[in-house]
Length: 371
Image (cartoon, rainbow, N blue to C red; front, side):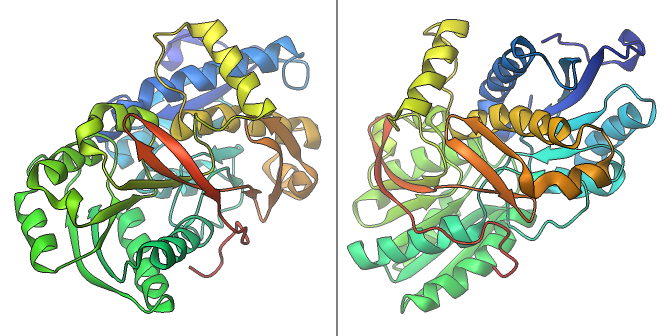
């Protein structure tokens, strides 16, 4: 994949299909940006070896999704408006998606790969990852039953995904005879969690729901362990991959749980094939292809499958054909319902610097009309 970031470097070419890959190159989410880029590149190379998309070579144009949401949206909109890109995919936070979708989704197919708060209905947006109803709700229930957790404290960054997910978590806690006993929302890039840790201690919480992004979660894990709260309170995150776990350190991952549709430790034929291809392409020193990076691999595959099935780049036609689309990746053969991927989701527990999958969570409707 060419690392070209300015439209001037591209000329119109009917033999090439260019897709904007929007992933974080800076900010808290930048910690797993290299995995996103590597996984997306691997998928594009595989698509091209199989004949491309509509007979065209698939190329990825990188856009920094870690920048200000309006800046990202403006950059991608300009690429779409000038015909430089014919599709959009990648992992970026919900505030970027909310700025971007209204400006481009009706023009080109947009495959959003990040877990999110649910409820996205913009025409032309297709979603590969988890939402609270299928990810958080069963995880809170299982942990509540197995560990007796009843008092949850929510710690999140201050934007739409954590706040909307916490709103759902309040209801999920009540369903399990528990409650959310406190909430704290912090700016992206926070590095001092002292006040929040004291609040957790004073609230006598027995479970912390972490809705922190990337390096913010890493710093929170370290502070949580240093404060000694890991001996009295477990943590559950819906955004914690192997890169974040490694950066946190084994001393900071005691009683830490994560829920996602993919973990690197899953061992079946699909995941083993993916890991083999990834290792062969990048070597042993490459960033870990955890759930967040793997989502970008799937984003490229799904976008290619959508266009191939519709035999056109017309967004309306792609949407009309979407229910018949399937693609095969590290999570097996997957299909869409209401423009969301139907998927298996797992609960895993940190074991030092790796995750051990505890169980597969019960399936729910991926479109999550109600959270």
